[in-house]
Length: 153
Image 1 (cartoon, helix red, strand yellow):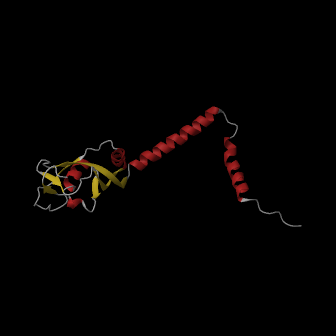
Image 2: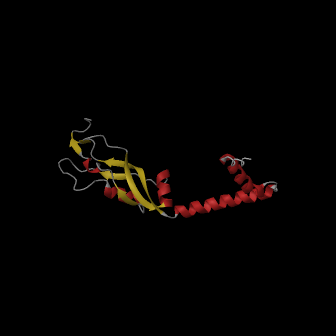
Image 3: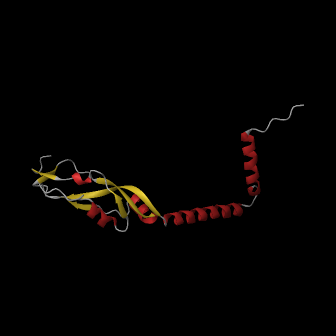
């Protein structure tokens, strides 16, 4: 006689699932409501605990460019948002990612002929981000500058 072949993997998985679900079968509806309430409360507490940790995230932050548009124009089109990397509390990052507390950064561009000593984005972004810490700016952020000749784009 040959030994019986081992049960298939799907058969074994259904046996394990049946064993796990057996205590839940044939209960009153109030039992199922209580189990569902426990899962909702546990997942809510897990999410709230996770949001109190510190994270790093990439955001497209809105920017409002300030310059004399009658006398100057940008050397290349200025983007309405800039990609930045920030670090902060999960709650604050969540509100920034959803767009709740997202005041645009007021960036004042320097006059032509005066190269910026550093990126013109960093100070306004830091002010508008508040308690969220700025980690990284785009690599080309220092090249936003103006040239003479307004309205000639």
